[in-house]
Image 1 (cartoon, rainbow over the protein chains, first blue to last red):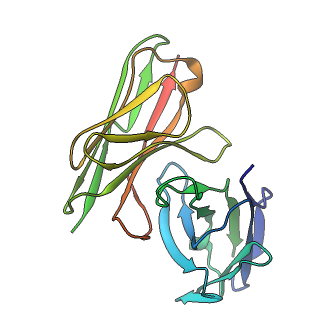
Image 2: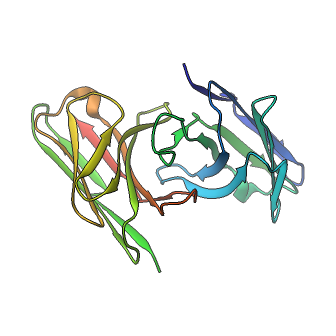
Image 3: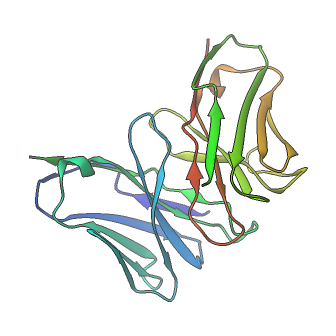
Length: 114
Length: 112
């Protein structure tokens, strides 16, 4: 069966450090992978999309890597701030549908302390 | 600019009552539309998606249904709610390319 696994344990880091979140998947052959941020009681917000032929993508303090051999994506937040505290979700499209309907991981909660 | 509207924000309904949640998108045409549910402590579960008027794909068999009567309107319904239908319901849209989703603000449904 298809699985998207994110670390269920919350990640606590100190302000200014780099946060690294992991997304592993099985039984997907994704053309791309997406990362979202979700705050409590709110809908997820799209952050980054990385395609299968891209090893790395950056946006401001965010960096995403995508290793289709390891079936893994890493999401980095450099110089983290308390405002970065949220749950981060990775998402993939299963091959069985039109390719646009995403399946989401359960997310990893990040807490950045001053 | 494009916006997505979802209502109501919260809803408390008795078991066995009907449900209708509405989602509309403005500022775009022919979007892909999606309904997700997020139960407490669980991930986002894809319920339905639509690539056009009257075209609905169901991902999970259950007592919910969806309809798309207009290009930018997506409705989630139930004839009789179950306790297990409680959760946070999210509508989302994207264009017909591999762009990220834009989610609505969600409806917190509690079935009592």
